[in-house]
Image (cartoon, rainbow over the protein chains, first blue to last red):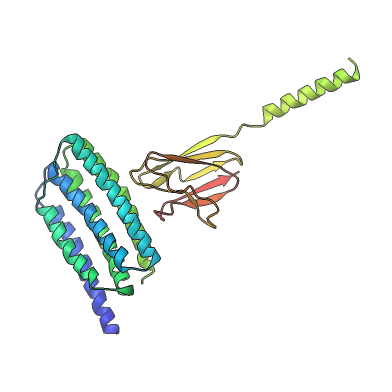
Length: 179
Length: 106
């Protein structure tokens, strides 16, 4: 049993590291145009909504469910702002290597989450939320904000960072319950 | 001046003094911006009102932290909520539980 826990723990660390590694790789990616920046921003938010949807199906823990509900509402609010802005700017978000990589990695994580249940799921979900928010903060600050040319798009990305950091602190607080 | 006249002058003086010394309740504003209460620590007098204005893109609430004695319920983006303050309180956003503030009654 101890061995299984160790393996589960090490697989989550690997998962977390891969997410962080992805962010590091993303930060070194070639520069994107504003349509591609918008696409990455929307994709990153949609991925966390998708994770929350899995949590709502699999978890019975009130803290996890409440956190997942907050992620759903907040990331939907960010997407709504992004859509309103790109509509105003007449920019169509464009898929690119970064958004495709984000989505492909998210699909793998989602499969891994779906394979777990009970406390193991709750722990895996919240560990992933901590790692994912760290990675997204790193990507937004290190890649998207410096790359965005349009001032309003840059301002929107800057406005999102405090929300992401608050989500990270909240996730770390929930994570403490599973230590 | 007879005794009724003296009483009238005295009452008029006292009521004028009272109206000069008693302050009208004030209204204070706390902005909810960048996932923070600004200011996050405010000192008021009993009977003053605090208005919280949500300038973020997501909904928040304002909830008394200790015994949940009062809550704003959901404050959508661009909306506000006000409360007459009767006692010192620590409060937080129950949606984003790391967002905290304090009202001190002096």
